[in-house]
Image (tube, rainbow, N blue to C red; front, side, top):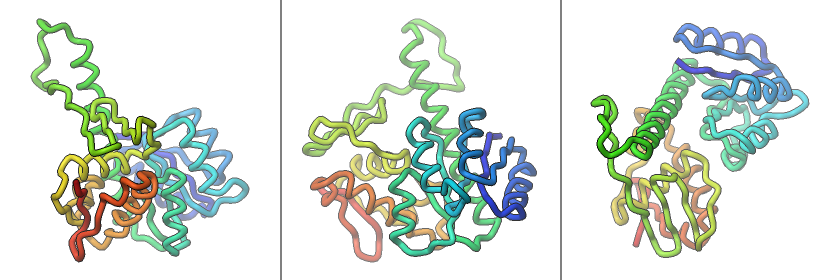
Length: 247
């Protein structure tokens, strides 16, 4: 079960989302404006934020930008703005995903579950790596957590990815990537030449079964290409399939 912050100024919608999350056993915090949301983030450090774009005073984009200065918890944006440029803007400032209004509660909860699964997996991986670094060689390791040897860096021309530190560098300089951008990059760069379908990427990185959410992949690829500069051209579109990283 997770700590979830819901930020929505429409009280009826906010209450409905909170009720659904509480019914699944999550600890839910509720905010109706941007400043209150930032206060709750500081106080409770939620593991997931559901954030409306259009908020009174401080809007959702500004909240997202400020949260990203100090925190990496996933952010799911709710928006009535359906233009592609608006969705890309939300992803650019640090949102991990978006869902357009009006939305079905079933779809929203599916995305919440998928994001929380990724949070849980990331936490387990971090614990495993930390245990692998701190356990003395002769120590008995719990059979529930079996550390694996550290992966070597992935080098593709001027691009270097360190899977253990979760850091990507371009020409020796660190690249600011969101968790989903990093996961997308390491999956593609680890298998150069292999074409990955949008359906596969959605299932592996977001945990969704394919149901028309392919634009989520497209917008993340667009943003990743931009951050990689010239190397971004190595992420090529495979017509009617998806994407692949070329040597």
